[in-house]
Structure formats: structure tokens, C-alpha cells
Image 1: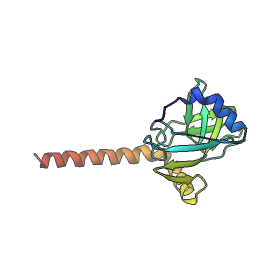
Image 2: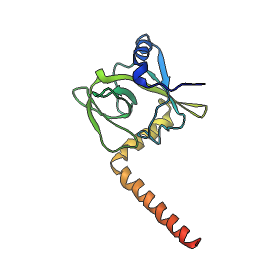
Image 3: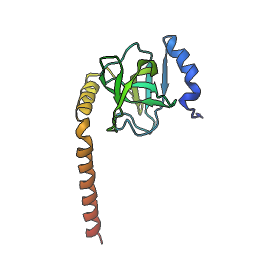
Image 4: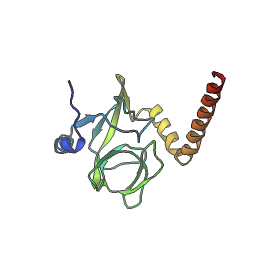
Length: 158
């Protein structure tokens, strides 16, 4: 039996583990990182980091205290980060490193483990970030096409 606990409740333990050189794993919740992270049992492993680079997946704390796991899409000259969920279009600007709890090193899905250093994962991430400005057009068009097809199939079955 497992119990779901909010990250806020575990933060002091997480911080202690990460500061002592350990790792922390948890199941991310929500859909903002789809399709990279799914809400149906994916697990991530994070470690402490001194700096982030483009494409990293940091766990950070917003000023309102909420924990967020999104992707770095650029690093600013002042050392802050511009971050966005893989399933989102709005960029969160100027996230400070002091807000960063850790960075994802590994993704676990259905018994398989994927390192963020895997070359295929890196190619996927570069592509996914590159098409960010047009994803909503691409996928919005695909959704409309699917809807139109399903509507026509429904009419033929009547």
C-alpha cells in the first residue's frame, strides 16, 4: 500500500537527501509535461545541481510555494532561466537558481529507465523545444482533423 504525499510536505526531507549527495524520486502529477512525462505512473529521479542548462528538467519552487517540474528552454545572461512545460506555450521567465530544488537525471516508465543523457532522448528534447512555437498550431490542426473524421464516421454509422 502506498500513500500519496504532496511535495511541500516532504520538502525538508528531500532537501536533506539532496544536500547530502543523494537522490529523490517521485511520481510527477499533472499534464503540463506530456508527452515526456505522463500522469499514469511515470517516476523521476532528481539530484542536486549547481547550475542548469538548456533542455534540463528542474524541480523548482514558485514564489507562491508550488512545486513545478518544467523544462529549461533558455538560460539568461544574468543566470536566470526561462522555463516551460512540454505541453504548454506560456514561458515562465527569470526563474532564479535559488528556486531550484534539483534536476531530473532519470525517467522511469512501465519498468523501463531512461537517462536524460541518452542520445535519443536528447534528440527528442531538442526537436520538442524547437517546435514549441508552432506546436499548438500543429496539434490543434491534428485535433480538428480527428474531430472531423470522427464526426463523419459517426454520420456514416447512423
